[in-house]
Length: 256
Image (cartoon, rainbow, N blue to C red; front, top):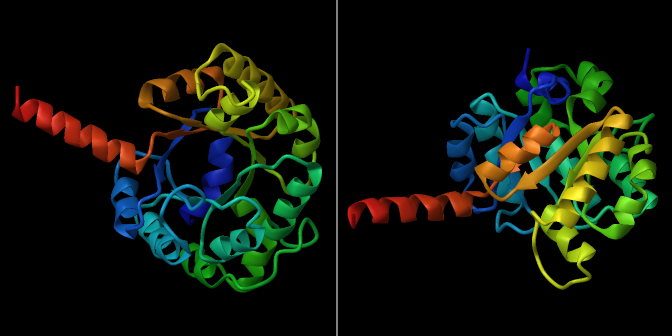
């Protein structure tokens, strides 16, 4: 059975999963990281420099390593979310979901009827899953996850309502933007006590709804802390950060 079919079940399976985070525009970077011991690879088309064409090339490279691909779309770019699912992505992360209507629009573009309004055109997904069109249509809503990003006071205040929207499989916390929002724009501190309190609240509400809690971690050490809290999916750093760490480590060893 294709790896895509088990991804949502694995997210709820108990052990936390870790995803690489890729923003560099070369698809081979995502393919290389997929060969490491990550559980998934996320392509960041919001803040990263990777575009649609490169992401569509990266998705089969990730799948070839036996890993699911997720894509963070730009703010409000729900139509493109459908295109990434057509290409074979196993999850969509949508930033700045601050209203119930935002959540409904996300679900509309990422789920087929009767849950949503996603239109037919799953060229890459059919190839990667090996499913016949009818079988894919019947199962597609359960093959991929739709994450609403919670990263503002407004989203925190209505997190139960966001989670209640049919087709929203969980939330993805953006701790840096959340720290900016909670501090009134005074600073960026994704590990502050105020952010941690908000994370505990969000995690409690997600688990009460029986859905999936995901989050970004700035480092492996922070990822371990967030996993211990109970998050189902944790993104670790970024490809750019890993490149810099590797360079620093090599230079330090050379000059020791």
